[in-house]
Length: 303
Length: 247
Image 1 (tube, rainbow over the protein chains, first blue to last red):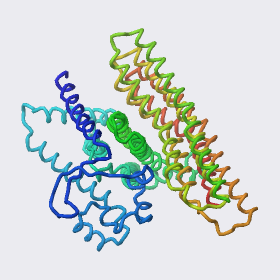
Image 2 (tube, each protein chain N blue to C red):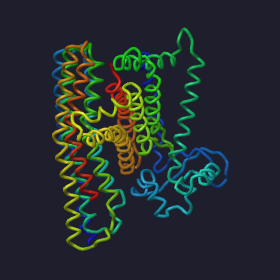
Image 3 (cartoon, one colour):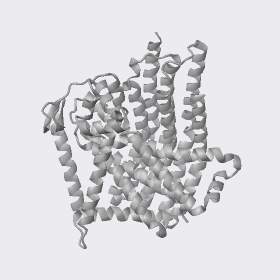
Image 4 (spheres, one colour):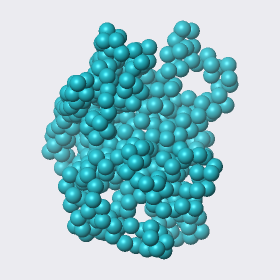
């Protein structure tokens, strides 16, 4: 136990020291990727002089940033990945510009999670390594919760909830990396909304499967027939509550971090804010999302 | 000319949103900390567990205040200052701030109550800290559903009200402004009861789970039923707010 805690502490400290060192270069950020002029891959410190409003627009409201024509062409906004950008534009039209950053982050995260899963699976041994032990403990914790709430027979749902938790958790933690262009996908309302709709659809599919269609519809007419519209609104409010909770917390953390670090010229304060909003609040909110999806399911199908 | 009114209402809205929401958030968190201190005095051996539960509960309680801060910062930095707006839109800024500010008051108080009861329960039976903390998180999330309704109404007031309505008659503008105020009052005061009420349910459920662990699923199901019934009034006010904004 003490060994594990020590390692986690070390990782956190390394992240924050890196961030602290970077924050001392005023107005400077690390740029990793293709250089705009030479076209070669490079890692460099980029100097940025921006006022607060501009920073916020760029980070939080990219559509306004582009609409104000601060940039000659919006392609620069996507950090010079022109080829992928052009393909996206050909397929989905101009609106893809706004969502390009989100899509790229989602793509990276999906690749990362899939590779990580394969990595862990390939190295499964009878005597577990440290990473296997960590994943097993985590999996068993969620499995116990699922068995406790849904019953022994429905253990198979564990995989779904583990995936849900891991995806949301990793997307929340991404914001620790002090690299421009990397932001949490959950900051964009579309991602939590999609996850929330998915969670509620899973609930309703399983409810219909268990109760049958007629009983399922009858469930909406309780206690009286005319309560039908209000019960339906209640179901929609589940989606709203589960997705806006995640969105509000992550977006709030992001906007507060941007504003306060803009006011303090990126010295020290962002470290503490990241500690609270990204690591602490992000973990809790992903757990709350998973637990709510689990309990919505348990109301409908538990014995 | 009109734009200066817009600035006045915008600043007032931003101030009201965070200011009012912070009252109950701070109160709830303080209550949790007080109960935890007392519990640690009773059982010093379980200090780490209690401190952890206290921090988790305070972080979740704070999310209502974070929503309010988001609305304030969006009002200040969202670029609304540069646009020329009419009277109705100008008052929708104030309405958005009020909706979020008053709307997160009850939920914050309720979450604080749930958190303090959970910490008290963990202080009495530290071995049950995992089921109690899980139940506390779910209960606080349920209680904050009404704050999320307020957030949705605020975001709708900010982003769906047109900058310049087609009908620029002064009487029509005043009527529209009153409708937006009505929406803010509906969701703001409509969530006061449900938010704190669900907090009471969650707190008592945490106490009961700590005492009778084997009945956990029964308690949780009762909590959900009670929370759903209590929350229906928040849904009524959400519907009324939608009608007022879009009619």
